[in-house]
Image (cartoon, rainbow, N blue to C red; front, top):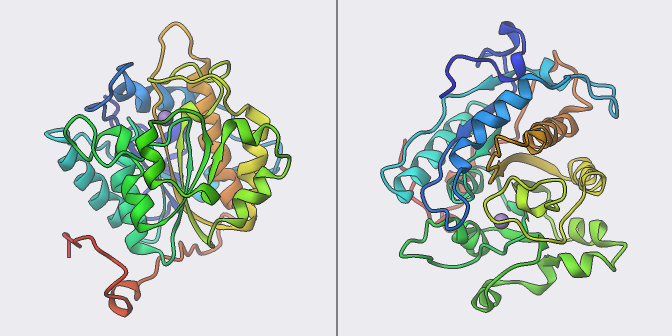
Amino acid sequence: MKTNTNYAGIPQDLAQLEKAKIVLIPVPYDGTSTWGKGADKGPNAFLEASENMELYDIETDTEVYKQGIYLADEILENRSPESMVDTVHKVTKEYIKRNKFVALIGGEHSISIGSIRAFNECFENLSVLHIDAHADLRKTYQGTQYNHACAVHEASQQTNLVQVGIRSMDAIEKTYMDPDKTFFAHEMLSNEYWMDNVIDQLSDNVFITFDLDALDPSIMPSTGTPEPGGLLWYETLEFLLQVFQEKNVVGFDMVELCPNKNDKSPDFLAAKLFYKMLTYKFKEEEADDDYDNTYDTDLKSVSNTHFKFDDDED
Ligand SMILES: [Mn+2]
């Protein structure tokens, strides 16, 4: 497992927690996957590909790594799905409270239960933009509510959940689905306004949970449960750019990279996509500007009905 390596080989002074505006948390968890195993190897493959990536972004003429990116210790808690989720929640919240832009790399999608919970407690009226082939809305699966098939059930109850790219689900999941906020892949194909339609459904504060199997298997075969008919590279970037430009994206996670040792190009896709998302977030920001992650320090005290989760760390 990786220790003490800077993200993408960036200079030491840009990789210090104190100075960094961005914190990257690896969560190599693969405890509940049902078909293809190997998402636990995702973060290392991602970090390895990131080290071999050029850090100047042509499209925006920026170098987002100069904002400072701190690579946090990996979260290795795996005694149970619930304890993993609790740890992700706690660690994510700690870095949000330190005024960092927090991004996580999984690991399977169940890690997002913890990250979404943390962001939802720290930002008012949070929307969760869920980009995925699968609805992931089951209340429980194989005996636990912390299965990857349940990744956004809690978000469907506690946040403004908007789902994009969906093309595989169980009929029971319709119970939890909001048709106005669900963008099925086959409908996106014939709706030239789908990007605008998605954005219309989002509140200002947005957390993005990006399951890599949302992408078409022709460009992203390295996932545990690939589905035909997914998003392609440039339309994905166009959509993400628009979201970052029009909304206050407060953090994101990227999950389900399940590396194949004979084909590393999907690892590079994940590395580049992640870096693009950071680039879009910070493209207007000067490296030496002060950063405010807009974390709402008063939120807990002014609202006592909005939150249903325990604040277990204070
Ligand atoms: Mn999925």
